[in-house]
Length: 193
Figure 1: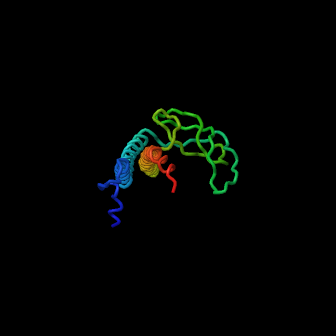
Figure 2: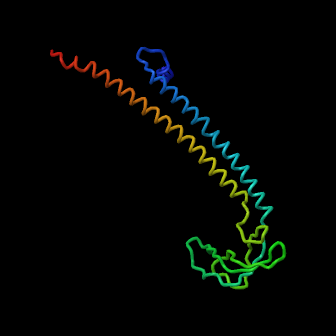
Figure 3: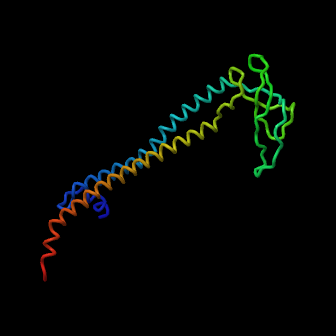
């Protein structure tokens, strides 16, 4: 009996309206999208993000090199933090580029670092300081974020479409009922018992 109630809008019936059939098919399509399309969107977008992330990480590892920089100034003093880590600051430093030339600029150093201390810097092919290349953790984080965003976007879009279709159908049903009442209502009000 419950399955008959679930699909009553698709059965032939003198009470079934065209809007009931449209709504039933819309619910069915949205259900399929939610149970099959949402995971598929997450998997496809995750695979694309993974491939892009791996390619970017590989290119960055080929282009970037680690070097030792010597600080030429003191970093700001260490201020205790809640988590016990030392914040990083941009501090003047000098290093040797991959081509052997001496360079100078700003490098990130922990708070409290003194002039003459060594810090690691990442250099691009031109010898400029750049960010550390992406690692597997950063790639995985971007994959998870992209997958979740795609899945949530697909689900949200499906639910918005369902709500919009129902709102349009409800408006049409109310207009039809109002038209019928305009025809029938005066007859009911004129009879006195």
